[in-house]
Each structure stands twice: as C-alpha cells, then as structure tokens.
Length: 451
Ligand SMILES: [Zn+2]
Image (cartoon, rainbow, N blue to C red; front, side, top):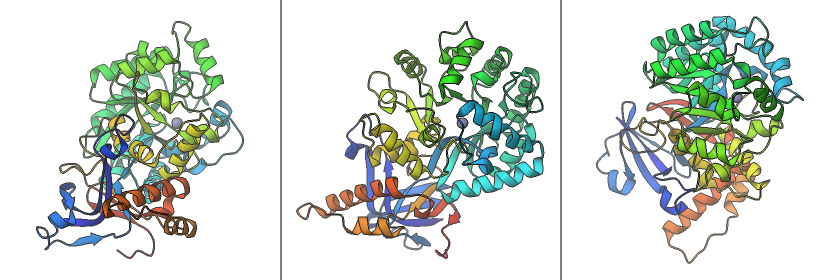
C-alpha cells in the first residue's frame, strides 16, 4: 500500500444539472490510499493521516490532483500526422490520413507508434481513451499489447472502411473481413486485463450497408462491447451520407438502422444535429464525444454543447482530442477550445464543468464510471497531479488573484482552486502535468521532479 497527499478535486454529480459547488468534492489537504491498483481509502489528511502514518506518501502540496483525464475520441495511427496543413475532412483524409495509416500494415511500426502515443497520453495526464486504429488487425494487436504492458484502461477496435472510393484500395477491408477480424480481436482482447473492445465502423460514409449490418450483428453477439464511430462532422460528408443512404431519414438513422445506437455507442463530433437527433440520442442513452480542437482545426463547425447538456434532451457527453484532426493531446488545451466554441455561441463553460467533462463526465459517457472517473474507494487509482503555476504567466495570474478576505479559509481555498483551475484550462497544457498514475503506479513524472 502507498498514499498520495495534496489538494484533491473530483465530482460526485454532474455540474450541468446540479449546483456546481454541490457536484464537486474539493479537499484542500487530502489523503488517497492505494492498495495495489485500486483506491482503498480517501478523505482529509486530518482524518486519515494518523491511521496511515506508516505508509510511504507522495506529497504534492500546492498542486491539484484530479482523476486521470478521459479522452473519448482519438486516433493512435494519426500521431505522426498531427498538424497537417490546409484541408477539411474529406480532402484531409485522402491527402494525409490514409497514406499514413497504410504504414500500420507493419506490426512493428504500429507497436512503435502505439508506445509513443501512450507515452504522450500519459505526459498529458490522460489515463483512459477510446481509440481508433486502422483496417489492419495487426494494428489492433500492437495497440492492445502496448496497453497491456502499462496496465492501462483503453477502449479500441478494428476500424472498418469498405466503401470503394472512400480510401485507397489497399486500405479498404470488406464487410466479411471486418466481421471475422472483429470477432477474432474481441475474443483475444475484450476484458483481458483493463483492455476493452469497441466495434468501430470508421464513419457512415466509409462503410457499405453490409459492413454496418455486420456491426449490428457483432453488437448483438457481443452486447458487452462498445461501439465507436463518427457522426455529422462536416457538411460535405453529411451530404454524401444522405446520397449513399437514401432510405435513412438522417445521419443518426443510418446507425439506428444498423442496430448499433444505444448505451456504449459513442458518436464523435455530432456537430450538425437537429433537435430530433439530440432527442433520439438522449432516449437511446447514447454518447457524444465533443472534439473542439479538431472541429476548429479542420473547420468542421461548432458543437452545440448547451443542447447536448440541456434538461430536455440530456445526452452523455465526453471530450475527445481527436488527434490527428485535433492538434493537441492535451485535454487542458482541448478544454480551452471547448470554452471558445461555447463562447462563439454566447455560452459559458466554467472550469468545473470542463473538468467534469474531462474526468467523470467522460467516464460516464463511456460507461466506465464504476471503475474510473473519481476517487471513490474501489475504483482504479488512475490520477493526474497538476501544477496550477507551471509557467511564468500562470504563476503571475495565480499570485495576483484577489480573494475575499472576509470568507472562511475553506471558502477562500475553494475560490483559489476555481481560479487556478480556469487558469489551467485557458493557459495550460502538458507543462502543468507533474505526475500521472495508472493502476496505482507512477507512469509519468515531469522531468526534474525526481520521484
Ligand atoms: Zn476522429
């Protein structure tokens, strides 16, 4: 057993539907006790310090410790092609993405990138992600092998695209090869250790009706598996989907007809949704991954977070970096983009709401909140230690904060935490990440920390 001491922040409820101060749990001097890979105890240092006095303690005063970030939509094979210039979705896929992803036929190459990708996630404080691979089964094996070595919780799956003309011929799979490959990979990897499998049609435009029907069959045969895809990202894409699926009433209906929309179904982007689509996503208990960095970088549009999180049609929402459409692995930078996307629509995204989406909100969107997303004992000890004064400007901003001197010390500590949290959300990135723990083990420490 070991313990971590410092200021802790997590959520017990959704701050979009509850008073923020009620939804949050902030302990200015807390102790988290780890037994093996799980959280054994959690509370104030005052209450627990004596009981666990004999344990080795990693102490992080003046930091902010959060549950590890959950990136609900990211492409590991696109790591090296991040920041590709000048195109919108379909041209970007053709010009940059498929030529890069073809390299993942080589398993050794795939493994090298998978290791780099996971190291980058950890350096950014991300401890769980829902991950796209390629049409090559060996790229899925390489990824899960890299995850297994780190005992980290990742969701991934063979990423199907079989529609002629939508990718180079040597990148395409077929409905049959996708079905057989997925079955084989589910048997090999699903729930092996912390690995989780997602049936992954890349997007409706990339799949034939036959391949989408295979996804429905796979989901019926493996109801415990996740389903991960894209939806309504780009205007041109949406028009082509309508052309290829004339029988469907809209983009979501293509997936509904395949029988894959329900709990554990995540539709990345979901930018251009009608009220009716939000209502059907809500009723189905399906999830959206909001990918603001990507939506801005590829010029795709502004996601309507306020509609997804409305009281009338509440949809489970997590945040995704969508590397390489997104130009950052940092969930903090992605939250900054989320704030700006909301601001462009005259909406506000507070630091606490943002951090909720990046932690417990993401865990709930992925139906993993019984295992991760907060500091409740019994969950995995996946956490990130953030430094709110990591850069000169962040230090200046934090030190200059004016607190209400009349308030109680606890209220002042809470206000300071909120001020610093918004500073990290607006100005922060991997420089703020001091340490990342996965399954109780320290897997990343900022250089110079010397732990
Ligand atoms: Zn994507």
